[in-house]
Image 1: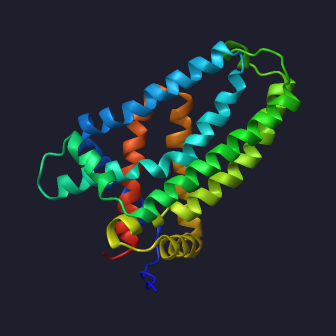
Image 2 (image 1 turned 30 degrees about the vertical axis):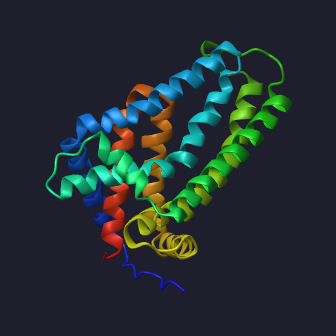
Length: 246
């Protein structure tokens, strides 16, 4: 059985330092990081176009929130970019693919779990949409201001989405880098991640709130996503390294 890695207690100053480290790492890899993130921005634009065509624009809230669930599956590419930089190399596109190629099976298991939660989230949101909004066509321009039906939909789905996002965050906050860097098993990594988050609950909830602002906020305003996604990824890696000795 794998031994649970030992973690240290985090402070807000550790979080601040990790954020500065993540910002510096992003500035050093800006072009490649933005290029990698732009792929998901284009996918977001395509999905929002479909929602507008179908006049179901309020579902964009669910897609934006869902990005919080699938985001951890993208980290391997950013980890590999960071590693290349730490090795004194100029990272390239091949390093992104390398990150996914060398990801252990457990990390792919976490990715599937995130995808499963994402589908649960969309199914729940679609069900609530059918009951609260119904078949009334709603375009993006009609979201400002939202009517009572749309407001109710946003409220109820936010509650369910917050729960799923919290579960995803607790399970993946440290498990993804633990499996990637220390070859921890999926079970060991997820248990360790859960324990570490609750041990540092206040600091990690501050980080979770910042993630909501960086990722979900940018998912609403997609041109910002290529800037905020790499920053969040490199900061997450810095938090992991501040917590665990490799």
